[in-house]
Image (cartoon, rainbow, N blue to C red; front, side):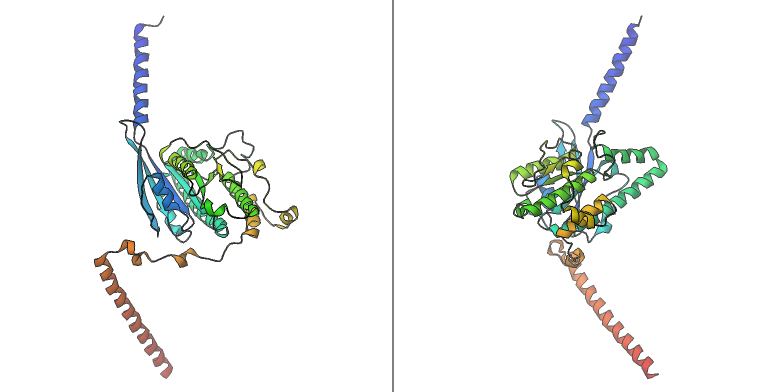
Length: 353
């Protein structure tokens, strides 16, 4: 027969566990969200909207950081979200490694913003940014695995948390190693495209998002778009519930949560059977890429050519620093001219001999 002290001990243990659980729930949490995507695609506007800052967005020239806070409830610590944004489209890929570290990778999420009004830039932008990001994450996980294989395995297992165990495509997809949200921006322009072109873009982005285990949504200026967008960003940044809306109609803004689509619903790449037979592709991703680029061929354009020199941007003006910079620029130009004269003199001397 159990003694009264046994019951008291059980009650004490239960009370301590309940108290610890409540403390954990009330503890302040920190998450990081990294925005990448097309130059001038709307990344800054999305961030400002989600942290309730009513200010005009400025061009992002390199890598920028801001943060937001939200309280879980009354008299509880505020959760902190670290927002990183990569400017310049695909011209500053080396900077991707800065925000993603072994210390924050377990609470890190990615948001890829693609400008729907520029379909010819869509695939190369997405491909370049995701490849470099994945390479960075793989390196971090490998480094973690050298000292803590259990932690590394847990990170890799988390890739599958949005894909149901009984999903028919589990053996056919390759989830991105971090939670990924793909946003198609400037829907207001996109909705005026020809129906067939909209269909091709929608099907392609549905395949890419599903293949990477990502969520996909289109957004524009309508308040209903902004509401859904905020719920998805707040889900990544603060762990809040996201919108339950699902929309797969290419005549409407797409809203597709990770794991809710399927290859059978998406269908085959948007091309005739004869065209598909002529495409030489080794993987499903390559097949969709080549099919997409038959309609929207990538432009021979480099973002780096359009990237301004931050030192000459008025928003970063510093009178004393700029004055000293002007002096140094003049000294450099004088040095170049003197060096050029010396080189020419040396060359003439060699010819005389």
